[in-house]
Amino acid sequence: MEQDQKPSNFIRDIINQDVAKGKNGGRVHTRFPPEPNGYLHIGHAKAICISFGIARDYQGLCNLRFDDTNPEKEEVEYVDSIREDVRWLGFDWGEREFYASDYFDQLYQYALALIKKGRAYVCDLSSDAQREHRGTLTSPGKESPNRNRSVEENLDLFERMRQGEFDEGSRVLRAKIDMNSPNINMRDPTMYRIKKASHHRTGDKWCIYPMYDFTHCISDSLEGITHSICTLEFENNRPLYDWFLKELGIHHPQQIEFARLNLTHTLLSKRILLKLVQQKIVSGWNDPRMPTLSGFRRRGYTPSSIRTFCDKIGVAKFNSTIDRVVLENSIREELNKTAPRVMAVLDPLKVVITNYPEGKIEEMEAVNNPEDPAAGSRQLPFSRELYIERDDFREDAPKKFFRLVPGGEVRLRYGYFVKCEKIVKDASGKITELHCTYDPETRGGNNPPDGRKVKGTIHWVSARQALKAEVRLFDHLFSKKDPTDVPEGQDIFVNLNPKSLETVSEALLEPSLKNAKSGERFQFERLGYFFVDTIDSKPGQPVFNRTVTLRDTWEKIERKG
Ligand code: ATP
Ligand code: MG
Image (cartoon, rainbow, N blue to C red):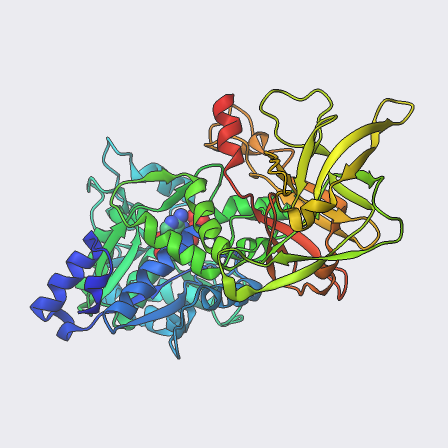
């Protein structure tokens, strides 16, 4: 069987047993059920990879179902973005795109059926009073005075709720289960509430809306789902789902819970992500710093790197936090194989090669990708005036500094060996340029015949031909590893990293990048992997987002303290 190729996990163990037993006729049918109240984030990617991955490996099906029971928070924009993101991740739900709101009529009929069975009643308690009656984890609940209404009265009141006769919050329909249950979810939970709001799909047809818990399990059942895979926080809802399905006598999917994904320096909660967008702390849901799939896409992550990450972290039954480095390594490993190398200088320092003829331009051959011989090579202009990274020169260098120092020699990648002869400074003492000499015997950056060696190789661009471009560098949105670690009384946003975005408005790039197309990926040698922004780039004028650095610089800094 194909599933043997995948690492086994407890979910697949359960499914293997069910398939072996011939449960559901051996069928495997899963679903991914987002609420369209925000964009999908990397946590959702884990859920998508699990449910769609299982359907794929067991020759089963996976539905996309929008759990759109809340008319107020949901928008068509979110539905569209969710579709786009699931497709981008590489999954296909075929014709099976469903909406919980498609089941509103059926759900209403089921509610009537439960009323008729004496298993549901209309309750007039205010929401505050209901909360009081519910009890706590350690104390039992108290029954509603309306709990023993007759079936006729309940049917009449529920019908009048539907007709819009009562105000919002004045009445609800509740399941009649057990106010003494140790599981608070079982203490006569609300099934329907009055909301005089338009719904993005059903318009003004309804002014009563079913609650998530009532809707969710029935939607799964109606779709013939065999395995309802969800996160651990729904474990305590399972008995309620079981109760509804049993009382209604309808198909019973097996719910299986797994631990949600948590990432360091990251908050995966649509509520908080929405706040970041609304308060304009980020530029939108697709800001490259956002942990949303659209944010990762715009940052330059590939769908395969995210799928690889989800496979790597596996599935467990206990909550834990994954280091963001694991995610970064997944895109690094992929781009190392696929991204062409180019040279770019982010913080330029001018170098004049005093013994190089004025006006001369040489074309130097540069390898596009040492990991991929098929990628070939390109020509780079070399001339008397160049730029190097300011950081690659030190006047007072520490011992192990192998780049350029006064009187020292360094290799310009694919260029020549150059030696620093003179430092030029402005009135404030800032270095404005370096005067160097080059060794013509080192063309291409090769060692000279005299066997002389240098320890350092640095990148550069030729001044006259360089392309000026905007480059954006990103850091974690939250500086604390655990962003929820907030001093008492303070907002979670105190942990925002003020330096999460650094814009280099005039980086200098090798001229070949003029033709870089929106959505292309490159390695800027020694600086990281970069993605041509799909929104702000113009033809001939690309804007670059750094996807990830070449190494994990953050961890190093943090460990040093
Ligand atoms: P959030 O807490 O971010 O608002 P949610 O759980 O309310 O997310 P839904 O739209 O209800 O968002 O989620 C759809 C599915 O994705 C659910 O089955 C949920 O269990 C799963 N999911 C949500 N967050 C994560 C996560 N961090 N890791 C794994 N799965 C997740
Ligand atoms: Mg939810």
